[in-house]
Image (cartoon, rainbow, N blue to C red; front, side, top):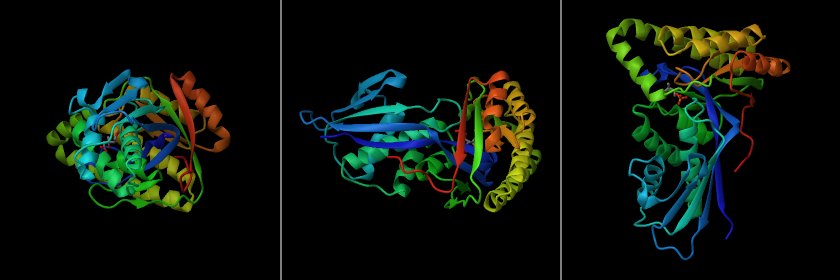
Length: 320
Ligand code: PMV
């Protein structure tokens, strides 16, 4: 029997990280150049619930029963089983591959969860709607990352640009003019859960300042949405750079990210900012397509360990 394959893209947050945890809006977009993929094969001779998981990228080959209960793969599969009301799984082997860098703010963990849940559900003959896949992936994120807003699993499940406010249905954004983002990896590990916890502690000490900054970021996000919907890309770039300044104020940037942001702007980007939890990980720059290569080069010279250039369109290309 051929494998059942499902995949999910990476993502980047265009504007609004951190403040989104406190119910302000944010915009996230899929990054299709990097993906997580899960392939499921039946094991006809296996016993019920005999599940073999093979993830060479993290040196894992194990039976599901041998994984700790709080391993993200175990959480995802146990949640799926409960959701489908199954007493046991038929035996299968699942191969997981991801080209999304880990701890970089590109949604690696959420993409693996979405691909895994979607592939195994399809293998079981259940074509789950995105809404259910998203909820299941969110449960994994919550068990694993403290207090996630849910933006990562949502943009990755639906694989299109979204306007997101925590705990309310997201809205799809219409992209009037496709635009190009260059993503630069600082090479410094960004630990989102740690950064989110640090912001929470600082906010408790300086509540009014943090609420004011979050409101300012919320305002930028509303303007950014309008710029995307009207195709005013220079304005969008300016808003992104302003967002970076506010993220610096809440203490989530680092010298490496600031240096990359400055280098992108000096090389002609319309705007740039850190993206995701910060403290390391990736930054993004909005560029005129003709300048993408020049900005990638400038980022490499400024210390980026990898760069990705991606186009943001209104709808996603059809990839399994
Ligand atoms: O997973 P990351 O690093 O892209 O960051 C997620 C964005 C935060 O706003 C910092 C956290 C969250 O849960 O929304």
